Image 1 (cartoon, helix red, strand yellow):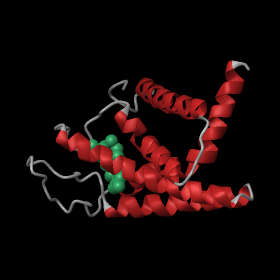
Image 2: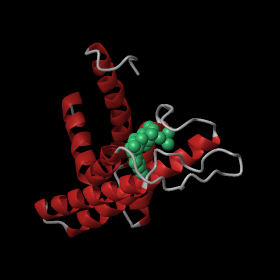
Image 3: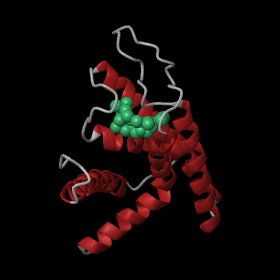
Image 4: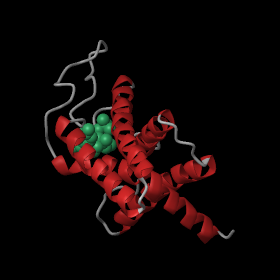
Length: 171
Ligand code: CTP
Ligand code: MG
């Protein structure tokens, strides 16, 4: 297998199993401002439980968009199991993102402060764990390659945005 064939297989695997999770993870940015899930409450360390970046509106939009993609994929492939994995992956993605924010706050990172790799893979790990819980038997090689690809694509798009002067920093 050549590099392009491997890339094609991994992209296909991502689209099939992680499509709803990726959409669920990407859509909350559309809400802008909303009601914080933690309602402004602080944890015992005095820092916010989750922070203003995790809102109910974002969670709902993510669920709506993610489950829609899951339904579209299941119908397109005439495969009801894809709906189960898709919805589960979308829910797992959103929860993974929330769990990561909880730990970022505990580590002292402000809302929106970059934490490389964790920021890119929180949703992916959440989706994977949740799909495993409902009986998914993944091809681990593709799952790991997919993770590498996601981080690499983020670096690449940030670099391109920097050279196009859309961003001030190349990361
Ligand atoms: N968002 C939201 N609700 C969610 C998840 C995300 O409203 N459940 C929106 C917020 O506007 C957030 C943006 O999507 O700022 C990008 O999400 P993310 O990068 O996960 O949040 P950050 O602002 O970077 O916050 P954190 O440091 O907690 O990751
Ligand atoms: Mg972030």
